[in-house]
Image 1: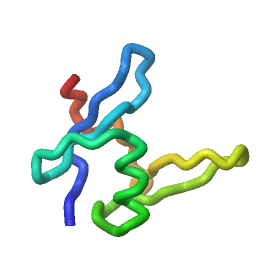
Image 2: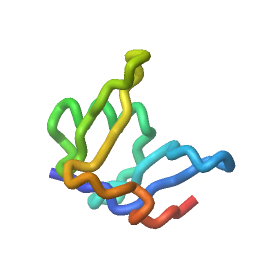
Image 3: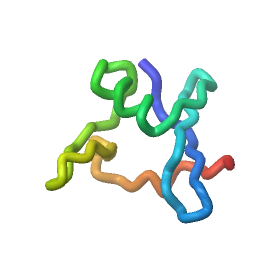
Length: 70
């Protein structure tokens, strides 16, 4: 299983992609699909009140602890 080790944010501060422990760079949407499929550990997919999917960490920590490499 892979983990997220870094991320890329756009100029608005939104996460646009993740860097995995194997060096892959995957988009936020691809990350949601891989979390659903069980390929990424330590991350949960959530759905907001409007039906939009988003990612959170299993331990409740923020993605802010990951380095922004973009």
